[in-house]
Structure formats: C-alpha cells, structure tokens
Image 1 (tube, helix red, strand yellow):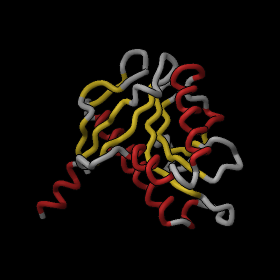
Image 2 (tube, rainbow, N blue to C red):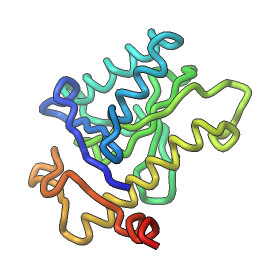
Image 3 (cartoon, rainbow, N blue to C red):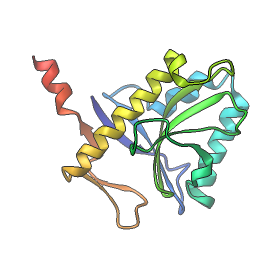
Image 4 (cartoon, helix red, strand yellow):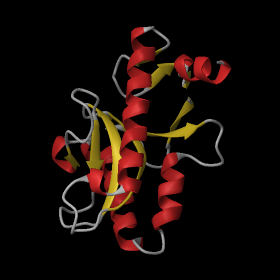
Length: 171
C-alpha cells in the first residue's frame, strides 16, 4: 500500500491540522469518497461533521470527547467521529493528541448493530485506518516522517509505502 497524507486547508487552523489520505494514487482521498458516498442520504449529518472538523481546526482542537475512542488496536489512535451520539454516520479517524487528526472513510451504522464488525463496509473502512496508522507508526520509527515542533503538522516524506506489500507483489 502506498499512501499520501494530504492536509485539508479548509478545515485546518491554528488549533489543529486535519489531514486525509490518498491511497495508491487513487482518484480521490478517503475523505472525498466518504463525502461523495454520503452526500445524498446524510446531507445534514455530513454538514455537521464538516463543521465539527472545522471547529476543531480553528477553535477547539481535537478534544477527546468529540470522538468515540478505541475503535482500533490498542495505542493506534483509531477512533470514530460523529456529529451527535445518536447519529447514524461514522467517520473513522486517527487522532494524534488535540492538534492533529487524519480523517478517513466510514459510513452508515444502523442502530440494530452493536459493533462495527457486524457491518462489512464499516469493518473495511476501520481496518483501512488501522493499516494506515500502523504504516505511519513504522515510518515514524524509521525517521521518514515526524511531527513538527508544535505537533501541528507532519513533516518529512508525506508519501509512505508499505514495503511488505511491495515484497508480496514481487513474489
């Protein structure tokens, strides 16, 4: 998997930076696809999520209570953002403290399911964010990417490749 971290300037501000991910030179980022997939059925919730992200970037930072924590593996920062607790729409993110968030994909979570594992779309989107978090963590430990001194942005190579995937393709 090859990813590129893309800062969303319209949502970022002096309190937090909001990024999304472009995978394998795809036509759109994960957040772009999330918007396209949900703009008709969940227009109001989508608007509320976007406003919340902009508020985080410009006014409040990425406060913990905005997110449903522990949606991934221990310590990977994967969480879900929703506009209200009773909302049907989930947006999976990777949260790095209060100053940096990577938004990915997500989808509709029917009220009749208790866990994301009961829905194939939510499971796939969540696992994608887990893989991205794992790749970023590995590249940070290798010194290819790091936080700026104020922890507001990523620095270094914003294009990251999972070499294990390349090895699998060459076998």
